Image 1: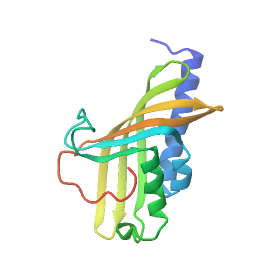
Image 2 (image 1 turned 30 degrees about the vertical axis):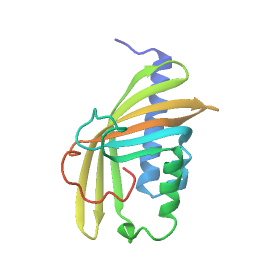
Image 3 (image 1 turned 180 degrees about the vertical axis):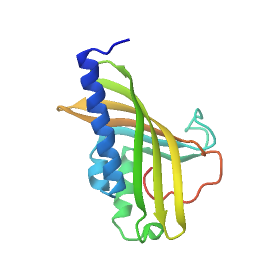
Length: 163
């Protein structure tokens, strides 16, 4: 089915937003990354499967907006020794899809590969990421981000950067 010009514009807006988010994370620009969130944002990285209930089972990350802010503040303390020196990161974002758009919120998804190198060696992370984005003053903001790591049921290295 062919996309309308409006759907193509929305896909382009979402694509540019996701690329910007990836760049901010790769460059450890966490204040700018935090500014991409809505005030009621939820950031979730499930453990042991993708369709678990984060209120009932352990998650790798399950943060509300205040916890996202605190996590970013912790990076600035200089006491995050697992990130001394900081990991070098690069994300590849692909297979971007707009799943729904009601004019206010956009549900989108993409595949992500994250390459991390640090003193302990190189690690490759693969994930499917779901987003709920909201239009706010002409920009997009994240209201929800769920990162489903392919290997989330296995023992994982410390993930001290934001996935």
